Amino acid sequence: MNILGILTAALIVGAVGIFIGLFLGVAGIKFKVEVDPKEEAVLGALPGNNCGGCGYAGCSGLAAAIAKGEAPVNACPVGGEPVGKKIAEIMGVEAVDSARQVAFVHCKGDCNKAKVDYEYYGVKDCRMLSFVPNGGPKSCNSGCLGFGTCASVCPFEAITVKDGIAVVDKEKCKACSKCIAVCPKKLISLVPYEAKQIVACQSADKGPVTMKACDTGCIGCGLCVKACQHDAVKVEDFHAIIDHEKCVGCGACQEKCPKKIIVGMD
Image (cartoon, rainbow, N blue to C red; front, side, top):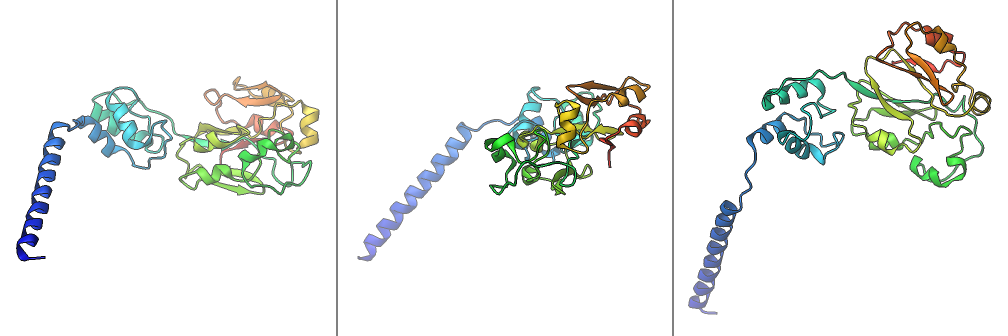
C-alpha cells in the first residue's frame, strides 16, 4: 500500500470519527432529559445502599418518587429519621418524626425446645421447604426453619442463626424488610426499636397442640391479658399479641407467662 492510500484511509477514519462525535454531541443536547434539581439533591441525601427496602428500585427510584410527591420524605428505612429530616428540608416540607423500627423473629423454638417429625437432608433454603411434608421437619408448622434464608438476603448482616433460630441484631437492622419478604412462615415483622415486651411466637394452634410441638410455644392461656393493667395485651388465634402503643413496659405480662414466650428486646 502506498503513502497516498494510507493518508486517504486515515482521513476517512478521522472524518467519520469527527462526524460521529458531532452527531452524538448534537443528539445529546437535543434529547437531553432534564433532571429536577430537587431529585438530584434528594438522591445526594440518601445513603446509597440501593437495598430496595423503600419499595423502589434503588435510591434513584425513591429520589424521583419523592421529588414528584409520590413518596414520603421519610420513606428510606436505612437513613431513618436523620435522612428524612434532610430530605424534608430539601423539599420544603415539615419533617414528620417516625419511630425507628427493627425486624423481629417471632419464634423461640430452638433445637432444644421444638420437636421434630423427621430429619431433613435437602437444600438448606427455607423457601424450598414449602415442597416437603408439613412444610418442614419441625412439629410446629409455624416455627422458624432455621436455614437462614433471611440472613442470606440481609444486606446489613443483621441476622444470624443460633440453635436453629434466626435472631436479629437490632443495632444493625435497618428495617429494609427483605427478611420479611423471604420468610415462608411469615415469622418476621417490624416492631418498634423501643419495644419493651414482644411475644416470640405466632402459632395459631390450640394450646394442647402447641405443647406437643414445642416446649416454649404460646398456648393462649390469657394470663398475660389478666396481668396487664393497660389493656395492651390480647389473645387472637390462640396466641398473645401486644399493642406496642399501649404497652408501658411494666413487665407484668412477661412475668406471668408460664411458657416464657414474652421476651424483652435485647
